[in-house]
Structure formats: structure tokens, C-alpha cells
Length: 175
Image (tube, rainbow, N blue to C red; front, side, top):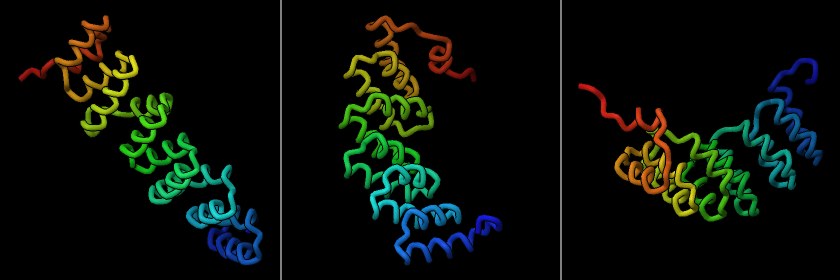
């Protein structure tokens, strides 16, 4: 398997090793075969938490979300947030950030939001940042959600400078 790098052979060897209860080796060969769901299943079952995050990030969105739920139940919210987000469940990732006051993770999610993002997600993030005195961040999200009047009020109230990007976003298109 090491020489041929054949995924089917790696998978078969992984199954044999799993049957022999050689779990670490089985996980390695499942991973080499790119059958990450099998590797993740074993890693979870046998408490191989360090390997679990890497394997999940290489896997399908379904496996990422399943592993995120696993980490959430274990109280490892940072890992859960990252996997929910990568798995396409931004709303769930935000819920955990809000509940756990995970500012860094929330900022990473907010940095990826844009004008195409779900308006309710933009609103929730803006409200959270506003509640936590991060006015400039809240203002930026309000601009993304096209709440220009409210954003301008915040700029005035909290002395937030209107930069070129904000001004451009709030300027109506010429017809």
C-alpha cells in the first residue's frame, strides 16, 4: 500500500486493521484511502480527539456537521463552531458563539459575511457586536445588510469614521 498508494488497497487494509482492533493504524489507512467518514467514526469511538478535527476538516459537510455536534456535546465549542461553519451551518455556528461569548470565532465568521449573506445572520451579528460595544464592527455589518440609515446614525453617535468602502456601499447606483 505504501508503494502503490492505491486507495482501494488502503481502504481494504484499514478494514483488516480495524477488525484486528489496531485502531490507530486503521484510521491512518482509512485516511490514506480518503474514506474520512470511516476514519472519523473510529476516531470518535476510540477518543482520538486530536486526529478527529483534522480528519473532519478533510471530509464532507455531513461529516463535519456530525463531528461538530460531537465537539459541542463535549463542550469544545471553538472546534464545533469551526466545523459547523465549514459544513455550511453558519446559523448554528453563530448560536454557539453567542452563547459561549466566543468573540474571536464570531469575528472570523463576521469577516466572511458579505452582502449576499443571510440578512438575519447579518442582523444578529450586528446586534451582538453592538451589545458588546464593538460599534465599528456592528456598523460594518449594518452596511452589508443595507441598513444605511441605522449605520449612519451609529457613525454619528459613536464617532465612527465613514471610510471609502462604506461610502461606496451606501451610495445608490446611477441609473
